Image 1 (cartoon, rainbow, N blue to C red):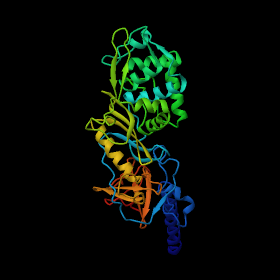
Image 2 (cartoon, helix red, strand yellow):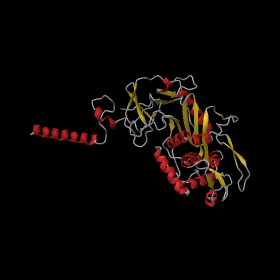
Image 3 (tube, rainbow, N blue to C red):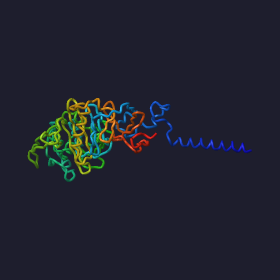
Length: 397
């Protein structure tokens, strides 16, 4: 009787253990997270899987193994602005990103999209007749050319007023000239943004004045800038330092000058190689800046968003870094742009094509590390896909 009782108790305990194991397995992944393991077919559930909706490299969710731990001598710049992107203007590859998919108010860099659509849909000699709505539908303090109802400029003259003076009344006038109304033009802007591959952009006006529904991301803005600077009309206008606007009803002939300081050789912020760009500022957007530069066959685009007066310093740092990374005007070789890069106490990882890994797992010497949304290797935290990292950044398996 005693033996039977013991056997019964043993069976009950064994059954209980099996049941608890099954319940536990439904909560905790039991697959191995490492490539090449016996359970490789389910490895996507472990570290190395892409984070939905976040990866700057969203088209490539595969894990990457780094066999080399030799750090490059090239330092990744420390950017103070909240959002930033450095893009290869030829390929669209992001060479640096910080909060690249985060929505920000663009302010007047919006006008790059306005100029692009105007250049594509009008002739430079066309006449723009300004309406009362175009010249009065503005917020207090908005920059204007002091246009009034009935004033006329050519499209070419208007484009210089738009991009050099950043005149908001001119933006409205051009929008009405193309589409009949600002709202209809905004629909064109959004359709064009989607055509260019923008995924998180919505425009409601042609000038970038404050509106909670008017936003874009650094990455999307770089895509818009890439298309804009491929257009010869936009590129020529944006690379002009000064231009004379003819007299209108309320103002005599006047000279407008480019607001982007890195284009003007007499300015202390001048940067050799900068071809053109656009500035922006509102109280909500902070400083925004788009810059297009060429040097030794390398073409770069820098987008800065939500800056507190560091937009020029951040742009210079990214241009220096980008040209060095691409092997132009620098002793740093392009071959040094892949693998691990240390900047101060922070680590970054660059792929063979020179792109910085973001929201990404990398395996080095049989240890897994995670690169966050700004490319910095995370330490002593939990990754977005739920894995714990130790103080050295290694995944705690």
